[in-house]
Image (tube, rainbow, N blue to C red; front, side):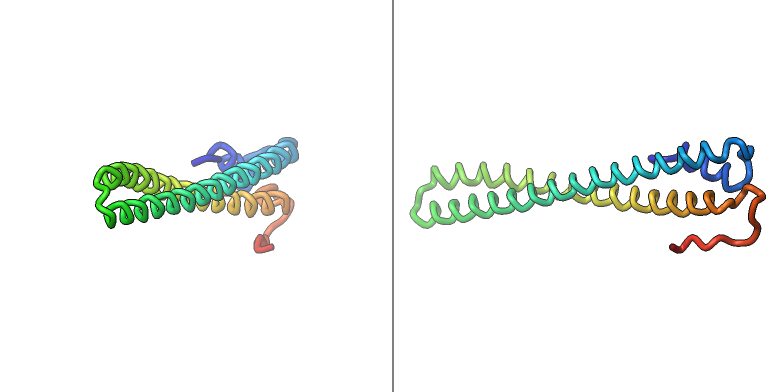
Length: 143
């Protein structure tokens, strides 16, 4: 996963495996990592939006080529029909690739979003003193 080392540090902190003098530094690192992860999510979201726009453009191009092919076929212009078929195949392939890319980007964004949510909860618990011996009982991490 993307943040395995940080997650291990979170676990160490939450389970009391970090000496008290190292807790503050580790919490600061956790906060910094969370900020970086959120920035990475923003980049991923931007990539998803760009790919969505490219899908829309490619769909329009494909529809235009299909319409032109139909018009050429209607007037018996076989040369234009053959050219349009070539472009139709290119646009259809490009669209298929973009749709696969979009699915992959959306899956990656969902995965990172889950990881960030978990890190946020772990950071809240660490800041509340879980694993430090400073508090006992459960910590409300729903906020």
